[in-house]
Image (cartoon, rainbow, N blue to C red; front, side, top):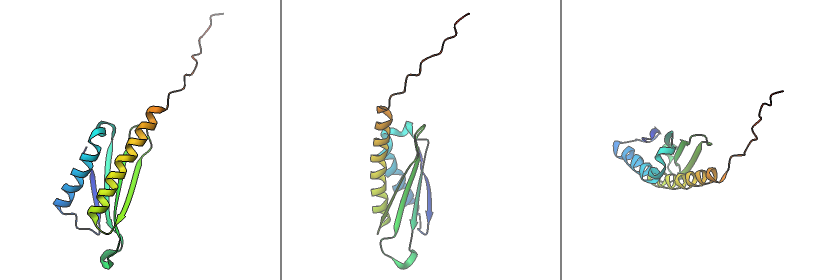
Length: 115
């Protein structure tokens, strides 16, 4: 699973891209078979003004389950990435656990009776 990385207003150097890939892979390696795609968007919300404005949004698709979207805002992009990856791992774990708890409803089979 290789995440798609989209950067807006932030210089996404190769080192930053590698950091994102390593973080996502290490946090979600236990469920890589269950994930269709992962998109990571990093954005500088205020531009050069500064402040707590670096956002990392992680969007992933699990088969047969709702999409998972997690967003974190922080003053540094690495902090936003770390927090978003941690939250994503927790959310995916919770979604998969709930999916296992739901038992399929047994629908009675209608049989044809010869008349």
